[in-house]
Length: 449
Ligand code: C2E
Ligand code: MG
Ligand code: MG
Image 1 (cartoon, rainbow, N blue to C red):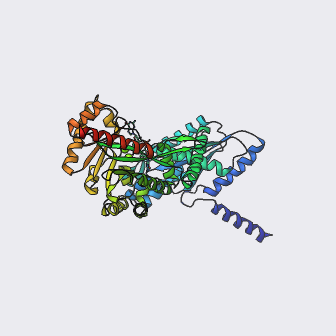
Image 2 (image 1 turned 45 degrees about the vertical axis):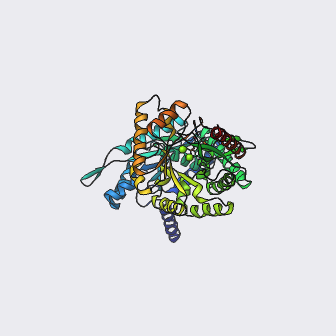
Image 3 (image 1 turned 90 degrees about the vertical axis):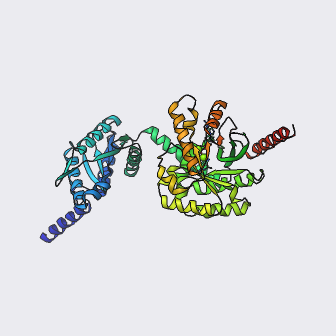
């Protein structure tokens, strides 16, 4: 009898341990899931909503690095103390990751109410922490979700809070985002696009369109930028500004880019030999060491001269892993592919990078070009960029030219290349050939006159 009881206790202690976070003494993720499971069962009979939240400390890792691991642990304990002191009534907080905490509010029934609770927690955590002689400060981001119906499982509820947390993190520090039905709709829409895009890429249904790039002084077309176009049977036209980021995020960008580059080089073989093709590379392709080989293999299959190809990359693309990007860029340049820096002036521009990367060309972002006639600062920025490119021996293309006035002003400042609706909108392969024939005929007429 006695033995049995002792065993029972030991068993309970053990299961308590399995549900406890040793550092802070709070419950762990399993305890959190258990609690939510139980509450969902209870609410099956009593249909009141409740709320869960996920709180993630912003910039905890640098604090750990700066103050040391022991201080980091101490701060986590303080965070745990503050959070548990803030739990009223039957609310609970648990530690579910290194610097991630989950809370459960059984008696919070609305999105507004849980957002207010979360903001209060962030406030409480923002007071300074004493670490020996020094003090540290922390902020936190929170994602919340509400249980409304018996169809939701603990996992679904947790995933929704996680989605909301990602969104909070993305929009800056110290934010609260509650997962709403609109977000659910948006998430479903993204998934739908992803599925259809996978199908379309496999079926070869994404097409390159081509936008002319001209010599601003002579107005002669010197090349084209390939821009991906996709019209889905059900979704209709989907802008690349929508589907390219989804393709990147969901790992479809590799096959998509290969398809579009293959089609683009096949079309460009029919253009005059002195015209180049410019192709955009996504940031995630610059961390994938296969990218260089894949491009080269497409060029050799379609028989397109690498010296007629330009690759456009953005500053964001260089930031994730500069060493990897540099290696890919080197591989491409070795076979004569030229590399341009796209959308210059809008991203996290670092002039240092222009020194490290030896770009052949720089494309000035549309934002400056569109305001060049009305806005003095834009004019100064463009002139400074042009002077810099001249010094560095880089070609320049101004993007987004829509009026003659912008084009002539850019010529006056010494800008060599231009692109924009004023010279031509992106058009499919066939229309592009037609455009080339017309402009060649025009050139012949001028010459014979
Ligand atoms: P981007 O590389 O900066 O391409 C230029 C964008 O500006 C294109 O939009 C083009 O249609 C638009 N544009 C050109 N001239 C004008 C103008 O005068 N006025 C205005 N308002 N817009 C102009 P698009 O085709 O919608 O592409 C958007 C972005 O999607 C591209 O920006 C590029 O970053 C990305 N993208 C498009 N195709 C591909 C692709 O095949 N691969 C990758 N990785 N990204 C692509
Ligand atoms: Mg581009
Ligand atoms: Mg651009």
